[in-house]
Image (cartoon, rainbow, N blue to C red; front, side, top):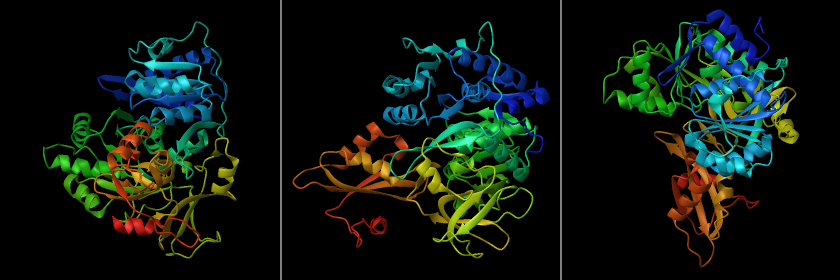
Length: 507
């Protein structure tokens, strides 16, 4: 990879050698230089090894955007293990499933998240250690801060090959259970390097990192990419339009990556207060389609280049983006990144002519190694080296990609992937529910939102409040239906399958 280090640990070490005294991370009032970050990663990796973490083990990271997340991510890589980032919005049962499926031996979390992470840890049969950042007071928990002091005899860390798995990133599945996409060191470094070539960032850039780092978009574009180029990353644990604009102003940030809902809320906040964000030169939008109104409104209001891109988790995740230098086409997600191929294919898996809509297929060094312990799903997703994304789109004569919709029934809520079946399986557990169907409908702020259609059992009663509260106890908040519509029966096709298009027309 053009002289790139073979793994994430080496990438950070290279940054420390080149940019040692320059700021790497700012979280709250604390800023770490690249040299300090590298030293703390080495200490944490040694402490994890002392706990028994070795090559090929899995370590779950359940943290918000903070220096501890970045230190954990790279320390796990340095120890030769695999990081398993966990969405901080998940409920305890969802966390427990990931811990068990991945076979994580350690769970790193933070005191404010303990209400979900502790019960999940207690359910797990494999997870031996709970590492907590902050004053937890949890009996038996290991203090994160104490792990930053290396043991007396630091180990020799293993050499990790570029094709070794660095991260298992769980993404929602059509069966309702998430699947772990195995992303290698080469996948992530290649994707970050190709992003660098497309959007032209360097060591003088300051990134606002408010995209969740447990999300592949945030991890690659706002964590791995800044380390690759030696840039400064400002970590924000939560998003509001005003706080994000304020952070850009305070830190003279130059790069911001977000999902469309963020740009819409920032536009709204800018109408209520003045912010000087003239330092900002690049905005990257991904995770869901951005509306023409928000795209043009943001460019006009702030005079900044908006670059829309596309990519699924299984592609590390960036596949394409409108380049900073060159044509930027409104409505397009740009040409493929350097070194990435995109093919539009029909049901027979043959490539379609320019302009025709088909399934978006991707090939390149950014395509995952497969799904963790799921060879059947891997064989279905990757055929002859091509990743079949399940997304539908077309290419124009200039090689620019346009997203048309989704072959799968995926709902994208504020950049987060939600599959209807996952919600349906929860609602089906309510005793008074006979049948349920969930669809995604357009939402002004979040892009899409889940709506549940429910048929109650004869002579039984269930209310919208019953359904919503039941879901809130078992699902992440963004997966909870925003509406529940009750029906006497569902329209079905000849094979008995519910015709969801009919439901979509109702709302």
